[in-house]
Length: 364
Image 1 (cartoon, rainbow, N blue to C red):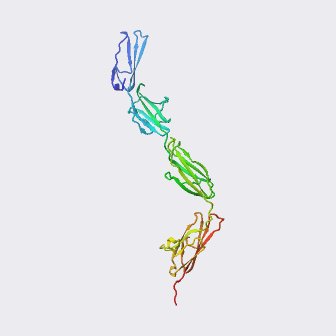
Image 2 (image 1 turned 90 degrees about the vertical axis):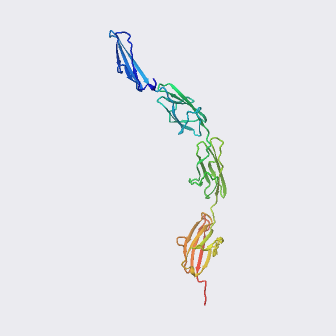
């Protein structure tokens, strides 16, 4: 019986096969029984007049849902409108899909793929390229099929050409590439002892193809150009071509500074390059720089700075407070700056700065 019989009372009527038979009822009150959900059982024992023969009738009345339907269909956390006819295909670039489904009532709901493999709710299925067909069969509590749904998951090859990680490293695993996906060209300098670099680009999508990964010989005193790009799984979508220009220079023998600056606390330049309008112009290849100041500079602090002629020069300052400050006294004030070139076999260069602080005026 259907679920509409739940809570109803049935009445039992029996007709004897012989007037002297004896009838006994079990699991039923009088001749009435209140129907509950599921199985409702009772029995009838019939004993013949001679008492030597008896027969028992067992009666089962099922009260269950005769109807059922699909209540929910979810693919990759997205609710699917399964009442559409036909159901719109679910389109993805992923190689798998999670499918969750639930019936409205207690009847069985069965999901099958095109090969009739049964897929339990919440499972993750592997997807073939293009269309993947599925069928949902809905049964009532009596195991009778009452509805069915067909839907398609379309797996398109990915167009993803984004980059998860990009490194350009030497034999010590030092990375030289500060990668930004929006920056197409890079200019990198490496030391003269770096003769090989390895490029390793990791795409976000595992089926994207990188062209350009590998180890490169880096030419000395020249620019080595490394290029790479990504091709998406679809074979059509291609990224921009990224360019890395690597300059490997011999060790520098440059022992000169580009500039030495000496200024007062109010930024009046005593020494510097021409554009600063200093009292004395810096001469980059002169070992001795002499500056004459008036007596009123006694006790003043001068701030000393410099600009390297090559990034890898080693600079040592001698005779300054905290390597930056010279406090003037009357007479000769001197300090020096030692420059060791990157190539340690080259001759170093020493700048000596003499600042005389004396009276510039005199009279009888």
